[in-house]
Amino acid sequence: MQGWYPIFKRELAGYFVTPVAYIFIVIFLLLAGVFTFQLGGLFQRGQADLRPFFDFLPWLYLFLIPAVSMRLWAEERRGGTIELLLTLPVSQWGAVLGKFLAAWAFTGLALVLTFPVWITVNFLGEPDNGVIVGSYVGGLLMAGGFLAIGSCVSAATKSQVIAFVISLMLCLGFLLAGFSPVLDFFKGWAPSWVIDAVSSFSFLSRFEGLGKGVVALRDLVFFGSLIGVFLYAAGIVIEMKKAE
Amino acid sequence: MIELNALTKRFGSPSTGILAVDGVTLKVAKGEVLGFLGPNGAGKSTTMKMVTGFLTPTSGTASVCGHDVVKDPIAVKERIGYLPEGAPAYPDMTPESFLDFCAQVRKMGERARGRIDHVVERVQLSGVLRQPIETLSKGFKRRVGLAQAILHDPDVLILDEPTDGLDPNQKHEVRALIREMAGQKAIVLSTHILEEVEAVCTRAVVIARGRVIADGTPSQLAARSRVHNAVTIAVRGAEKDQLVSELKRITGVRDVDHARQDNGLCRATAIAKHGHTIAGEVGALVKARGWGLEELRVEHGRLDEVFREITQAK
Image 1 (cartoon, chains in turn blue, cyan):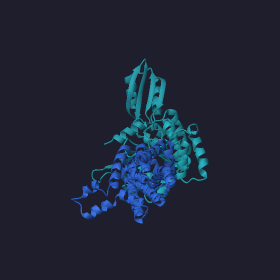
Image 2 (cartoon, rainbow over the protein chains, first blue to last red):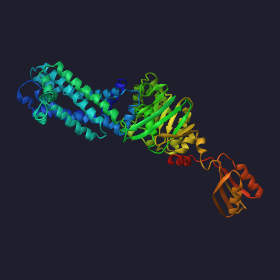
Image 3 (cartoon, rainbow over the protein chains, first blue to last red):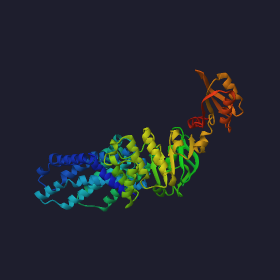
């Protein structure tokens, strides 16, 4: 993991040197607000909880997270800086992890900045804050999962547009893994254990589980290992694609 | 300091892939400045990328300061300063933050501040330290890349086309910098510019189709030229045909080129046989015939000609 920390710092600072960070955060908060208050009707429901916010969060992430992850490696490859980065005394895993953690910390920051909604419901009533914390943890884990998928896709292409579209498709697949559009695709030809396995990959069901306030170990393990697997795959893709 | 042993790189499958580097064996010692020459696609950059640990060799070994690039890549990367082709750097960083980042990755700690100041002065970057790299001119970008490569005072410097795209003044500066550092390091640089090899290199290695096809000092390489030791003269009072036939009679002369006559001035180039010097005989001939000597020049051979000859063979 040698060298991950300077890379993490450089990447994180990099978001704020360009307008990327500000635009992302503003759009994220704006959309979160629209979804929560307008479409979700937070006030009209008359219940002190953050259901409307967390119901829309996965869909917001679906579009915004690939926009963050698409540049991670595609930009390095296009600009040739990947050669510079990987001939500095860093291990490949250090580079993969440093970049991923910086992106994760950045999206985490955007998530934390939604705290006024949480203050609002606490001001208006007495919500179950355990449930809210669980949902935030779930949101963070989901962002991590999407970012790991996005890292891997970004490593495979020089084009950020391609990275964005493919990441979005993969993330959608994982989001809906437990639901009929994805399961129908497997039904009829795949054995039932495959269908069970696919549906257990559903981000949405896991996120809902966490949203009930139960931070279950198996969900943590699921997201942790999913992130691990995709980052490992990203490392392999980088090694394979170096020569191009 | 650098040892390559049958280093080979194949892209793609064993049967249909491209053999980019084909068994290169080479040693570079401290104090040497090795100029790596070859046509585009000859395998220069690929070889350098393997030495710096970016690409993994298909077979063969490479070691830097005794550390194998595959078994101990981090140790190798710590000891190398590398300027990749085109001097890539993060466009939205400033030279200051970029060098700072490199120093942190290289764990330079306390030393960092002093070294950054030193290299900034050395490559004259102080005027643009706080401008984003993407706004800098090509010359400054190259200097940022060089600064990054020499930041940690490495024992081995690998420079891929360090002067490509620079103007003559900038080229001169970069060469002066390389010459200054030459004594204490092993330096490998690739280039297309043959005058550069004569200007800075102590050794020239020519590579074509992935193989080393010539290895020697620049003057040894130039000596392979047809015009090595040739003598060009311009005389008054001689006839062109007479001059040519008299020159051809000298034992060391193989041929006479470029004979022409204008306004009573007669010019010709006598090509020497391999291993012969003919300047003395040519001078004596002019004196004996009583011609008026206007010019007498000994050629040392032209690298570009040798380069073309050996890289296009077969």
